[in-house]
Structure formats: structure tokens, C-alpha cells
Image (cartoon, rainbow, N blue to C red; front, top):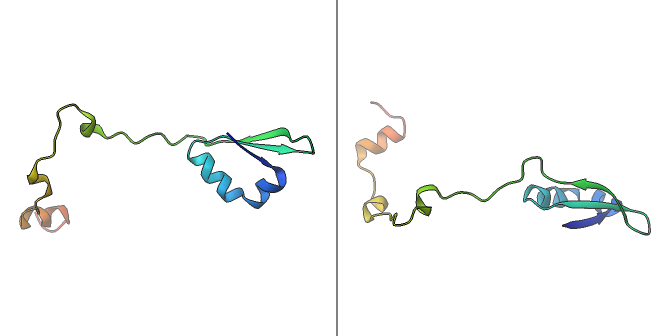
Length: 82
């Protein structure tokens, strides 16, 4: 959790929003005693990206995965002809 005074929040709002987008909760405080008055958090926190098949035990990419595509297949991927 990150805390910031109202002044700090006004000065660094863009950075605090980025932190909230990354899933951190930002508490905004006020007064000399730094009383919490607001909370900034993402509407939909960004989760960890799932790796799909790469997380499957025993799954491996073969050397063929890294070879260039045949010209015909490359043209199709680029939306050229069919």
C-alpha cells in the first residue's frame, strides 16, 4: 500500500494512477495527522499474464517454431491473396 498526502497526490497523480493500475492501493491522507480520506485503486486490477500452453508440464517449443514461415503462409498471414 502506498500513502500520499493530498498535496503529493495532486503533484504526482500520474505516477499514483500507474501504481494503482499495477494493482497497488494508494491511500490519500489529509491534515497534520495524515488521516486517510480517500483510496485510489484500479477498477480492474491487472493480473499476471497467463502463459497458456507454456505452463503445461512437458510442453516444449520445437526448433521448427523458430524457423521462417514458407512464403505462401507468410502472404496469407499478411492478408495477401488466398
